[in-house]
Amino acid sequence: MAGIPSSQDLSNRASQFPRTGTKRAVENLERVVQDTSQSARRLKKSQTTPIPRSIFAKEYKSPWEHYQKTFKLNQAGHGLVVHGKNATFAEGVMKEIKSIGKEELEKIKSYSHENLVQMQRVFYDEGAVFLLYEIMDVTLAQISNSPLGRLQSYEVAAFSQEVLAGIDYIHRVLGIVHGQINSDSILLSTSGAVKIGKSPD
Image (cartoon, rainbow, N blue to C red; front, side):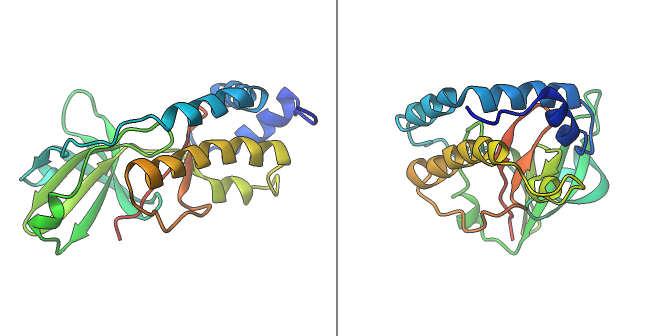
């Protein structure tokens, strides 16, 4: 691919990530940029992915029995960063949906795709639903608004491949429309993952 950046260029971009592990981010971004055929094969494979039929296990209790609130975070919608009240101290982002009926709750199904932010647990307590998602490191908007300026063409190509694979799964397999694809709902991690987030609002 013409115009593939140097490791130093990638290091400069990765240094804008607010969390740790920038070296891994550089290595993974280099891999994504240089092997576009791998993304194409993943997209082709995803077209045979069976429709998820299992209903997500709902827990009819307060999430705060298991998680401690820490601070607010906008991760494709407002939420709270939480950590487990156990030895794992596992982090996540908790989002709340108020005034939802149990019939709507039963429509929440499990899903698994490498380009979608994973929903890990679902709680129902006093008429509200709490969704626990994996935590990501930064939004695409934060990257593009960094001092380095606009994304380069190789970065746009690499991110687009991952986002399109996620959109394909949402539309074709889940049978729904996301409706909020923008730079704030595209999330990245320092491990090189590119995922689509969903606001519960």
